[in-house]
Length: 132
Image 1 (cartoon, rainbow, N blue to C red):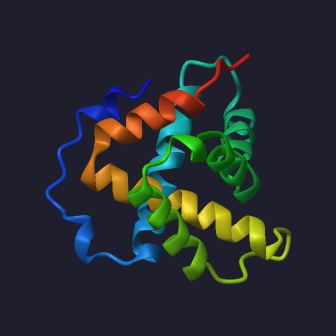
Image 2 (image 1 turned 30 degrees about the vertical axis):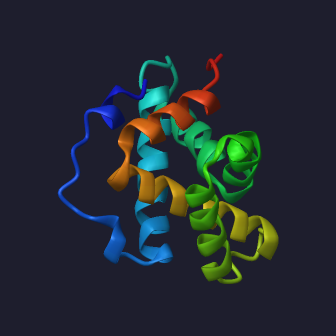
């Protein structure tokens, strides 16, 4: 399921981007990954949308980082910290700590997508689980 990430060849360097720009990109990459996971599921459009939203919300992203944090390199942990520290208050339905962790997750995803897509795909593979 991560072949699309592994085959990506970036022409953009993440070095000049800030944590929030990387998080913005990472959010889109994570959502695309989740949408592709659900493509072959025999569900109505409305149900597909709900399923993907459940995977890309701040709570799910914070849960994802807890599953892979032990596997992160020091550099990746640094980007997690940078993203967490730049996160704002976030939406009313999410506590600030959860939102900050989710922003850190998105920052790592955005940075790795541009810097090392193979590493990102490996981390996504750790997170993927079968869809019922």
